[in-house]
Image (tube, rainbow, N blue to C red; front, side, top):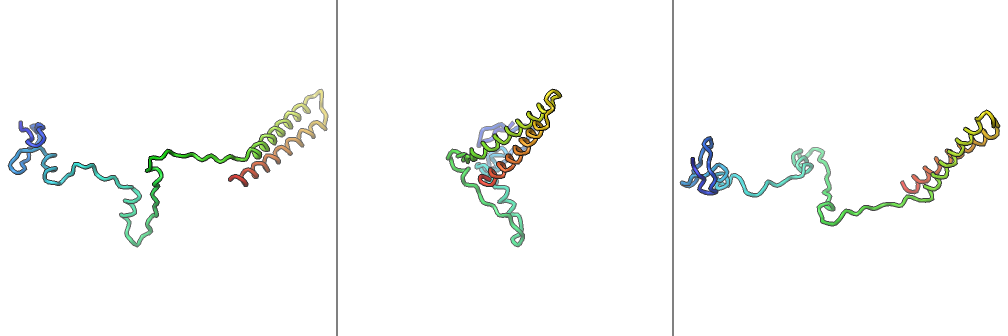
Amino acid sequence: MNVCENCGRQIGNLETPNVWRGSVVCLECCQRLQGTISLAPPAIQDPLEALAQALPRGSMRPTYVQNVYHQSRQPHVQTIEKTGKVWKAHMALSALLALVGVGIVIVGNVPDVDNPFIKLFGGLAIAIGLVWYIFARVGAWWHHG
């Protein structure tokens, strides 16, 4: 069994010892000493940049803007836009009105009550609540995206 004269590792029985300038070395040391491999890890290339380099010059090449923000050591800042509380209040109140209307319609269908004006009032509350909610949603979208 041979020992690598460069790193001191034992060269296994099934491995072929290499000779470099008269010294017996393992395969890794031989490649390193000949300069066919380097000690530095290989450079990691961005896959989009590799794709752009692989395409022919006349073809449509993808445009790629590198995000330099995430390479810095600054903490990530989360911006929170305050959606208008007025619009949220409008949506909540309109939903409440529609739910109250549903309750009034249910009470109006009780056999003891059976008043058509109560059913009409409940249905009107539901309709106004739903239309109001739709306008509130559109207003919130329009003003805050």
